[in-house]
Amino acid sequence: MNKTKITLAATGLNNTDNPGPGIPVIRAIRESKMFDVRVIGLAYETLEPGIYMKDLVDKVYMVPYPSEGSGALIERIAYINSIENINVLIPNFDAELYTFMKSASTLEKIGIHTFLPTIEQFEERHKANLPEFGKKYNLKVPKSISLLKHSEIGEIRKEFEYPVMVKGKFYDAYVAYNEEQVRMHFNKISAKWGFPVIVQEFVKGTEVNVVALGDGKGNTIGAVPMRKQYITDKGKAWGGVTLDAPDMLKLTYHIIKSTRWRGGMELELIRTNNNDLYLIEINPRIPAWVYLAVGSGQNLPEALLKLALGQEVKPFEKFDVGKIFIRYSYDMIIDWNDFEKISTLGEI
Amino acid sequence: MKIKKNIAVSESGFVFDPSTGESFSLNQVGLELVELLKQGEDFDAIKKEILEKYDVDEISFEKYYYDFINSLNQNQLLED
Image (cartoon, rainbow over all chains, first blue to last red; front, side, top):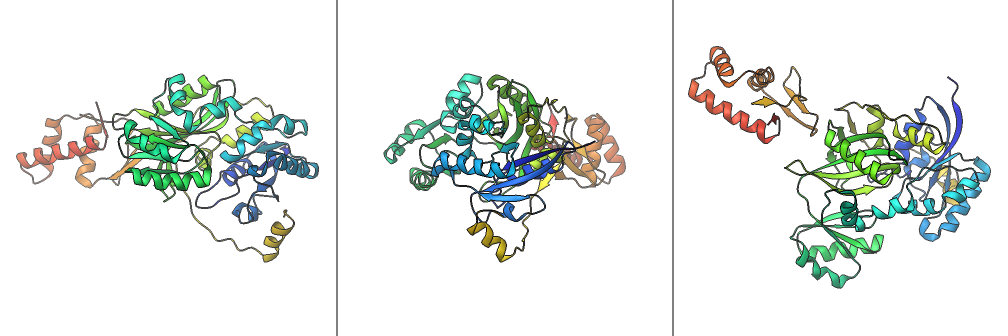
């Protein structure tokens, strides 16, 4: 079969101990039998390992952080597009998604397709809005409050029993066993991610996750449940196994159907000893462990690419249970000149 | 007492529960007990088989059997 040539741009090349999903997404799409892909990596930092993975990424450009203003980022992407003719852009960071969702029509006008959640979907599943989200869609969620000021920390003991979870708007989550620990985490998280800082009821149980893809019409294109088997000190999965968990899939279908979710997502759930599933978070993008789904029979990044191109995608019907992923670290040796090029010219 | 249907048990005694992702190792006797439970054998049939095969008295067997069942239950390997 002749493969369709396309140019894909992707962020999230930070394949570190706190990995972005960019490299696994690119790896999955490279394995596509339908597409012959030229991959343009978009990097925020010069030491993102994916920049130097030449077997996966054809060309890399530095881009400005969205915090520097969405105008600068979109302008840079328009410039890159004038050289590379990008067909599809897959953003892989929570913190940049808002900018790309806001600019989706601008990108579309210059020929760059995306397949992202709507602003409404993105906003309503925010950690700070989880109680309302749970009520609206009839889901079990932990009680949570949003803190905007240091002085509000004292309010926690009126609402919660310790321990509690203290979470950042985009990333980071810590268990706090007393008010002092909440203060410590509050300071650290607010300095890094801003406000609000979210305090959540600690739900005791086992963390389980689902990677899924919604077509924006209420259909689930694919979904694979997983349990982390090895977790780093940053709470990231370093190993995981696919599960036979019909209740997790049912919950996923329910969320995607009722929100008409558009794009990739990761559900973070806690299974209690009573087998209840609590929704802890919805990450509005493909997670870094997505290659486990690919390895168990669902190439979700390829399906997302097809959706972005407006092609019809049939839902996956099965996946292999008991498939395990194990990450490893690997030292690449790169030339000083490569580092010089990306640092000074902003491309390589 | 029934072992969950979807539990995978290898010849070496490695048990994988696909609904939780947990895995366990059984010794030879544990493996035999799980296999008998999987075949739907009841307590009396299992007792008969084990007492015939191994040098163990009835009271000791019962104690160890129920300890083992309790352990399977705690690890959510049994069906209601």
